Image: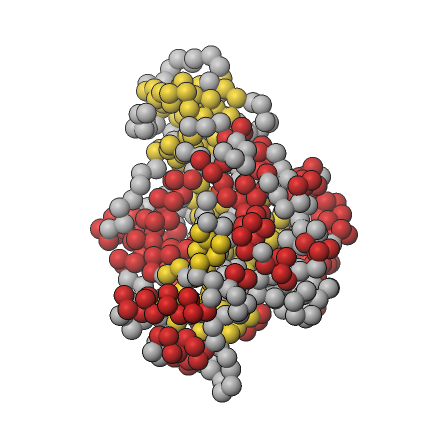
Length: 533
């Protein structure tokens, strides 16, 4: 296929699925100066160049509505994975196996910087716990290391790292959950950032861009920054980098201090704030920090909300009055109710978000279905993986709570703006992993159709961002952001969705090129004109 894109080009010999409706599809699409200028079944005249798509399928470029860009680029470029799923089981599945893996990492990584170990699966380890500080000290011979549970809401740290962060106390075991974990991640990232070089950044930008091209992702919502670090130089650096990237980035600075968030407004296309970190109402199931009214099955404890109702009301009111679109993490039913109550008191002036919305009560579902200015951002791929491999819900939650998972189909059929996302680096950025979780949902009666699943990555996030005039569907006048696929994505099912082949990603009518990750390439990118994020 000819991927050379001209400013005035007719794309032909393809199937152009607009996503405005499930069945609307055309055979020709014209692009002029980066925007769609023609859609139809009759070949138009007046286009200087033509590009044959050889009977492939075209869809709007996908939008990932919730990921952590700095962590994805920097951590993925310089971290290690502890546990993997092989042949249906977690490997390693014992603390001794984890010890061996960490000792191997230490042998190959002789730098004095922090070791970042991702994807520890506590529910798949026989001992059902994370290694403590003393064990990490022994395995690493006293080096700085942080080990993250797979859901990203609990961690284990060595003595050396805890002392560097200023959180060491005698008698502590180094295993952090809840607020103790969530509200120090800026300090952890600051420590990691000491080893960030232009070479690391170049590799991280290239890896991320190439993954987006591979999966047809044209835009992402980046939830980055942490209120526990006043300066947060890394997030300021990220904003500058994002404003030069090929992929569209929409930044949500994770600060409750709006004076700290204010400095990013000059970069933003629309003022946005929130996400995870200090904007979290609770944690996660795997870390026993999601806030429920019922106790966990295995411990008998209840997760607690991180903020009082008065604090939540104040946070939401100030951000809404200052003109920000707000994103707030809430997984457990108690946390969801708290943020819903806060939004009800604020009576928002614009569409805001609740991220995850994983275990709402039936009453919470009724409330959000009655709203027209709240979007929910979901990651059903994690639920799918848990049901088939991790089994943390079965181990930790009462049966009634498991059946209370977010009713995807009910929300969609009531017109709720449901947006799909990966929560990368918690999960891989692959959007079809999340769509698999949608069409083969934990609660089968709440599974989505493939068209509905695609809407959560196209027209819905465009509406959530307030950019439906430019993105989300293929329509005359909109930006020519689209993917080209061998398969008709609307015909995918749970057996075929894992074999999707995205041939090309176009942004503003131009084919995105894979990056090599060199420092020269990175510097050339930064020297170019910036754009709003």
